Length: 421
Ligand code: IMP
Image (cartoon, rainbow, N blue to C red; front, side, top):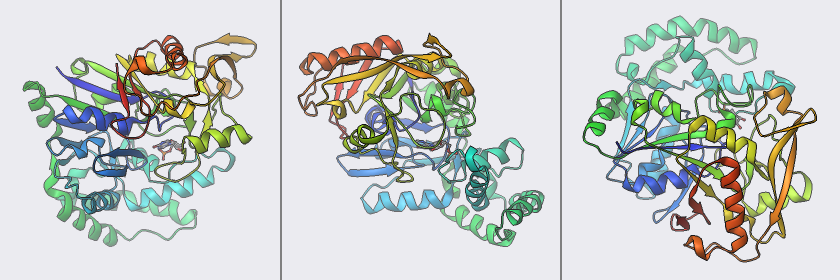
């Protein structure tokens, strides 16, 4: 059964958008299985350059269904803005569907995300302030509003009556005016009007495509180091970022997933707080950030940058079981005399390639080895064997450290700037 999961193997922003755009060309159904408008996927293809937040990167394949899956938290206002942008560029987005069991990011979640993260002071997570954490918190507290609820105004009203008194107490305590349920009901009416007909029963849809053996792509969000269970807790997002989440949030039986593509950037980036063992500072960081144009697609924040982190990517492979690996932005490393690679961590005087828990990771020292760099611009290369031998050696070291074959190598932002091996 042809189901491919595409997941991030680092701290997010690995280039999953480009890889999904590429693989979605041959897919009939593309499902985003987690997260919300905190995602920032940059896609450059024949239609232009796009920054996607909620929409699956398969939205450009007009023949495919692009589904916002049950594991997601959906901000309808953000979705409307994103669709408007696409339509202005001539992309109809007609394949869009929304699971009727996903959660709604409510306006108060967005306010709470900012206020609650600020209130953590030194311990802040540095969230994208898109309401993700509070929306998932309400979901597990059984106070969430499901997308399908918008078809039943009385259900929405009853849920608001249940949850708003406590939510408003928190808002008032944090210095924000209380939310008026009438205002939310009015917005819910607009969401029903715009999106009501796009709501679907995900299980029926997925089962039909599986039965017909039609190719499905599961698109992950963020990377393993920001996973709610396996990431560097608490500096994580509030959802599952690994392939197992493709089964849960994507509504696909686990045994049906037969390919897992782990996406790694040829170096490391992160936004938000928390440990990042290979992080660079000063001029070296500025150079890499500028060369790689490392500024957040959602928030515009300068990304933290560092060398490739072998233990982190290997940890992601262990969790996801990559059948193959996509290495992105290799071209950004051209022109360096030598390139450091982190092969292990020194944790309290002991070298290990395992991932320690957060308090130990904070003090972990990266153990580097250096490999020779290459001078040539590789952005026009389309075949593995045309790559400089040093670039092939660099990739083979990454393969050894991660334990997966680099089946896809990206040498530039455009869809065509890709080497398939
Ligand atoms: P949240 O997902 O907005 O709650 O943020 C939790 C953590 O994940 C913070 O460190 C964010 O910076 C990070 N994060 C969320 N979305 C992205 C993304 O698309 N790329 C990179 N980091 C992200």
